[in-house]
Length: 620
Image (tube, rainbow, N blue to C red; front, side, top):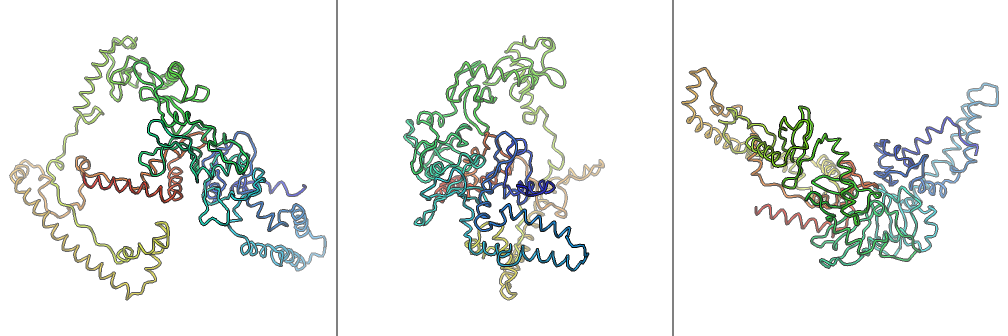
């Protein structure tokens, strides 16, 4: 086009990347790039957070790029016209290198001001265009993606694809619907725009609205449903809100929605991914027992990192070239496990495998101080006569050595093999004192306790509620504050009384203990030793006594909240396109978003479970 200069390319491309208008079409670039601040919001809106791009080079446009391009083409045509850019460059060159040689600084300044007035001011200036967009453009319509090639045949117009702060989503746009249905667009589709078609958007939205029931499980008669969430498709065994309902992950090629069946617009197909009922039953029944090896079972299942085999408490990855998790046979599984065990054995310094005892393998490993026998977390010394040929060690002899070592560890501290540490004098003579009374709360906290429920109805989010309470307190007159100050003063007086009673009780306990140890203290003084730890006054006594492990064990464990139960049930769904585990921070953010966006019926289910656990904990 002959527009632009090479010196501006790098800065322009960097802005396009930071605002997520283009995404790197390269896995290494996508993984190594670090985003912060507003760039994270831009990446999330474009649907690129946690999603790797396909292999290749260069850049591909994001959904945000289509939205912004459509908005500019409709309301600011002149700014996206190549002719406008070319003319702007000519004007800027004229200002920088004026054709007149008079050298009049005033004339040059007027030339600059004239150009700026034409660009920013006036009826067609940038300022007027921005004000016009803010007044006339509906924000909901501005977020809609309508110029994708796959959406050109959306003739009925009853659904739309939108870009929001938490990622792209699908929404009903019919005027006669009071509360339109929405569904998140899977991340794999957001990173591959060729998969976005009108029919597929219909299917995803319909799956959330009507439920994609594949059939009934023959064991208990409950429905098996195919559902679509932010990170792809998954199976649900049971209905929403039903006791015992479980979710089950799918292989990556199905979970990423790239196998979604293409159908005509308006047609609904219950089985979007081509999964039969028999296959769905097999997926929800995982893990399955493939066979046995050395009298130990081999299990096949699908986890957060994809399909795997489990043998002797060890996991072995199962790639598509190795076999299918539903159909792999015992012989193939044994060959795969033995092959991977050789690789892992060399990495873990395994010299020989002796045999199996109590469902765990006994091996001989080489360590820092020479060969040793290992079983679970118990390590025993290898007899000298087997140093050269450890594979000749009899199983029963190895088992006897392991049992003897285990007895030594049990006599010590846990399983570390260390002897119990001798108690110090302080641990021997200290006595358990009653807990100190709680400190009184301030007038501001009394105000917050009274107004919090009222503010929470108007403002959402803990941080926003706290800010609103602080604002209301700052605007409260001194006369109205007096009632809260009186409450705080009364609490302070009550605290002083309770603290005095507590101090007297503690001193009485110490005095009683001192009487019992008085004779011992005298003997210690005669021999030049210090007084026993319990022979002292209340002065300098710690307000909080460190609890022992026994006391901590006796303390009742706090029951989980509804949100924690929700996270535990959906944590396995939080994976990227390849089924890899995400970071703790990103997992927490996505779980929080899923909780905020889930329906009230789903939240009520976890709230009831949390209340039930709380009642059981109280009775215990």
